[in-house]
Length: 475
Image (tube, rainbow, N blue to C red; front, side):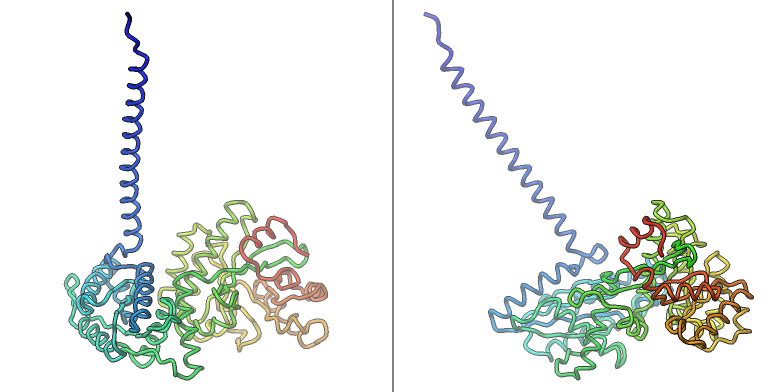
């Protein structure tokens, strides 16, 4: 009687299937574990500063949020300290970035030691650190930690053959209610820190909610603007410069706007004066220049504009007082690949008239192929004989003369004289603030060839400016 192997085969197949399934499950589990470990490592790396191995801003915010919840449950309080190094930028520029990095590592170690196990130190950005203190009894205890930090940083730090002295200004905010948030505490600490800097560096100050509304509001706006510059909340808008006779777009002027997370789009008139007063105009100006050059190069590269499209960027008097302005302009051009001949810098009369160093910088910029325009011409105190010795290519007639062009004989005479003067010196002329076709016609009669204003287009975000360039002429 032959053996019936069918049941045996079926059993073997079933057993084999079970074994294979088990192996697959084990393999999937192992792969999942490896992936989980890898993801955990990636998350850990993304939450730490690569230079100092301190927690970064994201992890600090997480820990503050957790500490706040615990403080509310236990009816306690916490403190957030913002530690800003007073002279780090000078050291970084004079000794180099490598020395600056080594300095930051030493400072981070000293901060950890001064705070102890009860506190957490994080690096928020280049020269700014934050400290979280849990279960802090009152502001005096937080102030004592700030004093420890100041003492810890007083000892000289050896870098190569040099001994470097470092100090820090500290802002303190305290919280313990469910109305507080990590970002809110950081903002308050930032306000306190800048209030301390206003009184003198190498000191600390506790945030005072009862301070005058004006001072507190201004400091808070300044704090938010520092964050905006750091986190690139600002955006660049572009307004076309148009040939009045043909409607051809000859250039774009870059104009900065602040995209505030709460208040929306803030125009420059509301924050540029503050940026100039606080020194924030320097990093903001650097960013605007680089971003605008990048966009102009993209327009040229994608053939969305003529290769001769001119980019105009405003440079403030405060920026011209920066000793490395020329270097920064050249760096922006090199990094973005924009031809220097396609960049025009707009400067006010006050920069050109009295500052010998600024005039030397203008000549150096001019020598590299960059064009220069005098903005708001006619509103200042230009000595016309002096102007002919300056390296400018364009005069921009202020909008105040354009608005009265059709009904004010004096405005028309000033525009006509400006155009004649510019032609005598082989300069270009651009009219600002054109609002209607009547003004366009009158400007053409007076000999003005280029203009900009709401009649042609408002300042536009980059995507809409691109569409305008692709569409062609403006009338």
